[in-house]
Length: 231
Image (cartoon, rainbow, N blue to C red; front, top):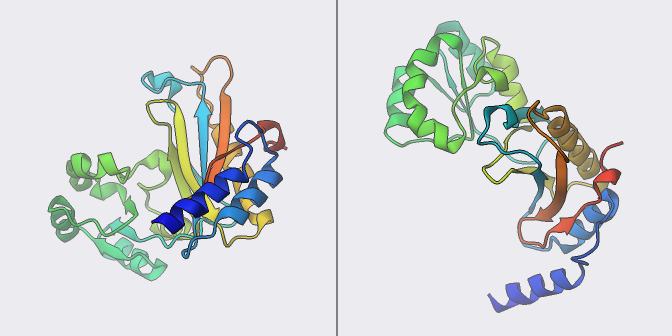
């Protein structure tokens, strides 16, 4: 624990907490400080000028990052018949209908993404209190309620990221791994921020993109100059 404390203290010493780094500088600093024994996740946090308590200021969407997230995603699909077979062939980890409903309703959720065909939503809708709080409830706006289960599974496995603004107007997401080269991380950050900008709600007033920062799982946060992100 003491060793970890010294490592983190040294990492903070390398970061100027008052400086707004360019995107390229931030990625370099964060990668250099990601020295844990595991492959740390590179995380982005955005402070937005919205109040998500109002429906017309909600920010929500999905983006398929150019280079994925580096995370292994387990996908569950609610489907029957031919669609169930398509999902299995596409690489879904768990496929089922009533039996999957019973497992999830009983608290077994060994998956990171949940997809459903439209005809299954009468059943899946009854799991709202279980899936909703975990951000796993299938939603047609996010492409997770669909007849095209093959594409939905492929996108989830390829590094598709769902985002939703929290109560304080903040969005958090993992946009890659410390093992990614700097160019790929830069491209992933730009793609994610671009998706947030395009998702700007009509009710947002004043400055929309207020603050952006990057960090690694075990490292300090670095403030970004937002002008160097959007190109």
